[in-house]
Length: 181
Figure 1 (cartoon, rainbow, N blue to C red):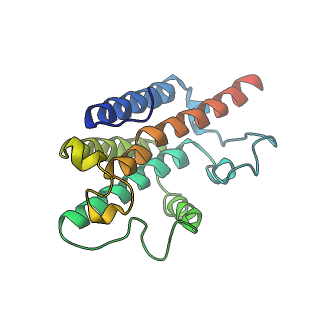
Figure 2: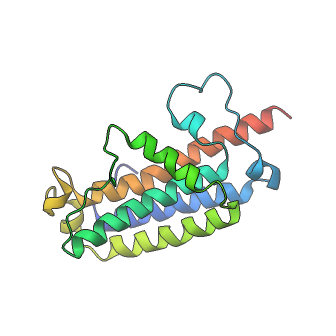
């Protein structure tokens, strides 16, 4: 399916890709879940995330924290507070440093806690999305605080697109591990 353009599609694709991610994680052995990522020299340096995320927990924390960004942003605006999507001091040119800060903050978070945090934030986000109409989600500039895009676009990025990214990354990890044994 292409990029969602309705609430029903967004909820369906997000839940489907979330379940695919969870099924993939469930299929991993305890060692595959806990061992550090090693993608080799082919992927190093291509995009920051290939070296940023050191293990499965880091990927899950990344997803959870982006859920939190979206939830916090939407709730603030619903409460009448003006707030940028990215918290100060970050902007769209410096959000890579924010992603690094997420990881630093969660070095003491266990994999089990990261899984639970992601499950809870996913459910909260699905409930939030469900509370909006198609028009509120997918009409560009329906809300002045979404700028030139739609709220749905932010939701797609934080859910279905992000889940697809995480699934691909974890598959590369599993393939690398299984090919080395």
